[in-house]
Each structure stands twice: as structure tokens, then as C-alpha cells.
Length: 160
Ligand SMILES: CC(C)(COP(=O)(O)OP(=O)(O)OC[C@H]1O[C@@H](n2cnc3c(N)ncnc32)[C@H](O)[C@@H]1OP(=O)(O)O)[C@@H](O)C(=O)NCCC(=O)NCCS
Image: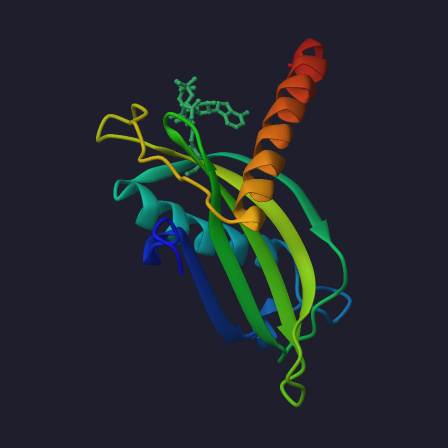
């Protein structure tokens, strides 16, 4: 682990999906997965910022495959880019049958949080400095998503 990969830039969480997580098709409900993603990503952002944070943007959630009730779930959340006040967190959701050892990726997304003070005003965050090839690629990916979001928000403007 290098210097910038401190304990606070990544978290990983494992648990078993519960019967109450079910959707009408007998699999894990998409809304439940979104809640897991938000909770894990929030914890990661909160660790990084060391302040209260709010979600400013959730985008591009892609559900690759359904998740079964009773599967072991693993959620990895990690800082991939920081702006002045924003923290961009990538989240990967994996699942495996409890009898198997291999996790399969089920969902991925990027969530953006903003560090805020007691009055809800944005606060400066410490800079994430990628040092590995993979971390640098992820930072580039976050920056490209940021540009795309700006284009999308301009496209959507006439309908607000
Ligand atoms: C998040 C919030 C504090 C930002 O306030 P604001 O006055 O718009 O602040 P700014 O325009 O200075 O933007 C702050 C940061 O948000 C980022 N941001 C704004 N809109 C964004 C978007 N659509 N996508 C990604 N990031 C965005 C800005 O780029 C900026 O980041 P930077 O400082 O790293 O460049 C405010 O919009 C808010 O309180 N929103 C509601 C949050 C909420 O209730 N979330 C759901 C429950 S937690």
C-alpha cells in the first residue's frame, strides 16, 4: 500500500442478503442495492472528508446481473477523484452463492458527495492524489464523467 492509499480512501463491506430484500421476481430489489451503495459510499466519503457530507449526484448505476436472496454481498467503495469540495466515490457490488468462493460483479456506479459545514455550506476537502497506474486511470475516468454530466445537465435544462 502506497502513501496515498491510506486506510480512509477505501472501504469494503460484506454481509448476506436477507429475505426482506426481495423484489417481485424473487431476487434482490434494485432499490435495496441502491441503499447499500449509498450507505457504503457515504461511509467512504465521510471517512475521507472527516466532516458531514451530502450526496450531490448519483449516476450511471448499471445492474449487470440479478442478485439472489441469501447470497454473500461484497461492496467496495473508494475515492477516485476529489475536486475543491466534492469527493467522487466509485462503488462495485459483488455477490456469490454462499457455497462458492468466487465473487461476481453485479453493479457499478460513481457517486459524488460534498463535504458541508453545520450550515450546509460546501467545505474544502483534502486532495486525493493517485499514484498507481490504476488509480490514475480511475481519476481520468471520474474527470470524463464530470464533463459528460455537465453536457447532460445542459441538455436537460429546457425541461427543468
Ligand atoms: C451539495 C450542495 C451543498 C452544493 O451546494 P452548491 O451551492 O450547489 O455548491 P457548489 O455549486 O459550490 O458545488 C459544490 C460542489 O458540488 C459539485 N456539483 C454540483 N453539481 C453537481 C453535479 N450535478 N454533479 C456532480 N457534482 C456537482 C460542484 O462541482 C462542486 O464541487 P467542487 O467544489 O469539487 O468543484 C447543495 O446542492 C445541496 O445541499 N444539495 C442537497 C444535498 C442533499 O440533500 N442530498 C441528498 C441527501 S444527503
